[in-house]
Image 1 (cartoon, one colour):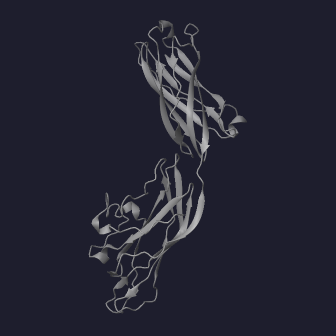
Image 2 (cartoon, rainbow, N blue to C red):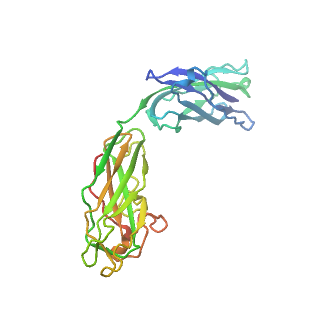
Image 3 (cartoon, one colour):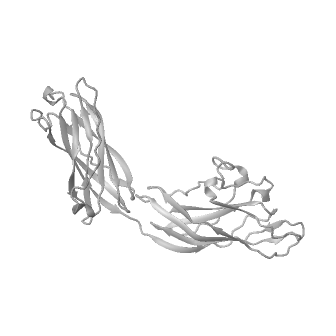
Length: 337
């Protein structure tokens, strides 16, 4: 026996949103192997499908008299904003065998009543399950029957309070660092939300610049100081219900260093030719978040300045796992953008 869903459209909690629903095929069988078939959702009608919608699809196999199977319902959200979904309904609407009636004596269905769940925008998906039972008393007349199901549900849009802010960190440093030209300077940022959000959040760091004042070994300031690094734009996606620092959880991970630049040869023929950085390093940039308040911090690492080998801390192959000691570098103070 098979269960085939049909399309329907239902009202939402939010008046501006419409739901378009499609469904699945479920196979019930006696002694025969189950047959599986998939359906693709299509608009209920062209005019009505122009508003905001979300889709429900699913498929399951293994039904026979006395059996209960879980029907997975996949909710897809094509909207930009995340949505919070609570009730999903599953209704039996017909069969293709007149002798097998579409009633609870032949197929018992359950709706999804919660807890509410959030589906990310831009075709994000989430899966919940509901039980489907074929009662013991379902007769031979239902063998090979196709049952038609209709899915329904409701959702509301969930969005944060977006914001954009230019940030400048007060001078940051790691003490007196001395290093040769060509030493790798690895730079990175970390972001987090102030509170957990029940939806994914994006945080962009753009138009950022890092300046590192340099002196030569004889104390003079060379031409080209401070070193000015154009930090590439970064895009971070914070998972729902998270207010952990992202993408790095400690100061050594490669994920916490998104860029590396070799130190230029500013002190050629001056003293020993070494470069010296004693702090007062500054990060400036623009932070844009789809939900606020959010925090950002930054740091840099020059392993060769601390007696280690010249390591690119932004490289997962050179700096694997939780990070090697050579790449340990404290973070700046956090800034609320």
